[in-house]
Length: 60
Image 1 (cartoon, rainbow, N blue to C red):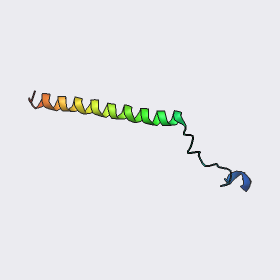
Image 2 (image 1 turned 90 degrees about the vertical axis):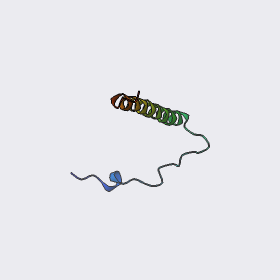
Image 3 (image 1 turned 60 degrees about the vertical axis):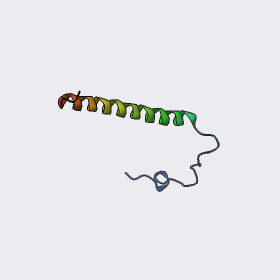
Image 4 (image 1 turned 90 degrees about the horizontal axis):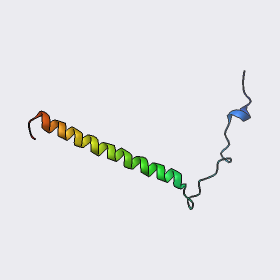
């Protein structure tokens, strides 16, 4: 079973370029929010690791 070539090809003229004058604020918010969440998790994990290191080595 072979599909016609017209179905398999994508035309470069059908895609429109994103409008940079009107950003998608939902996507911007999700990107920034997830970045903040990942950094917060990183800092909390680091603080937990430092506390565990100090506890194991008797530095506290």
